[in-house]
Length: 99
Image (cartoon, rainbow, N blue to C red):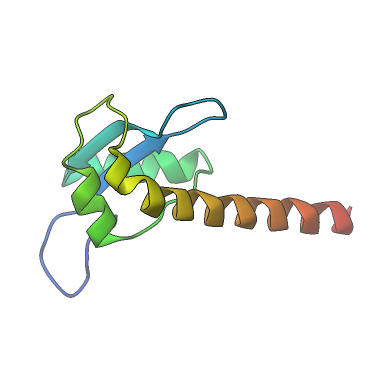
């Protein structure tokens, strides 16, 4: 999550990995300040979606690195992943129609 322009708080970022067949998404990177900025930069450079949600990031920061998210966060993360999937699907469909 990029820094909030209305405050001097440092950036905070959490990266998740989820693939078909995984039991639950896993926290694969997290950090604050320069480390968070680097996580965000690398995600964008790789063409990955970067979502800004201070509340969700705060909860995910409590999950250990390389640990699966807890069941209490399944719904929030599932809704986010479904939204990202729809965006990807719509973008892929638009690209095919233009070709």
